Length: 143
Image 1 (spheres, rainbow, N blue to C red):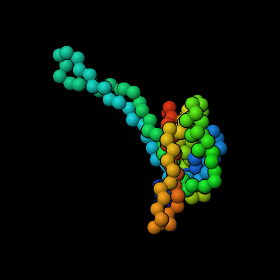
Image 2: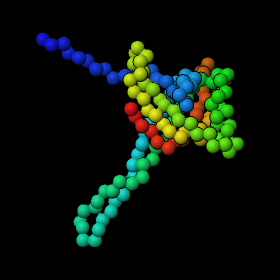
Image 3: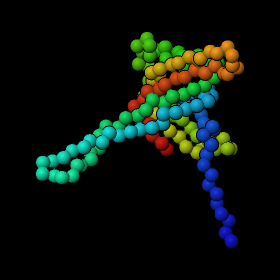
Image 4: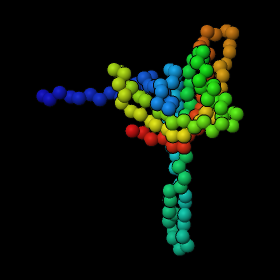
């Protein structure tokens, strides 16, 4: 009998975030890798059917979460935007297999931090202080 090849899905916990080609500090969560294209409904006079045309494509913001550390690089990037500096950067979310080898890459272009959120403090827990960064961008490609 031939050997059966099992192709298990990759774990969602094993990923890197690169900004301008440099691996950024470890993130515990990444969300928002999505794109949506509007549907334009159009009907000509005399037609009984509605045609579905392709509209504009929109990309969701990428939301990154990580434990708060002494690394201020993301805050400085956000501060540049607040000051009115056009500081757009390209980046990538890289999925790794169990051997820490790259198996997929989502590349975003012309991104900038549109929102930064500091940690929530609670005296009754011993949770890690988490900061959140939302990156708005002009397109994402999976390759």
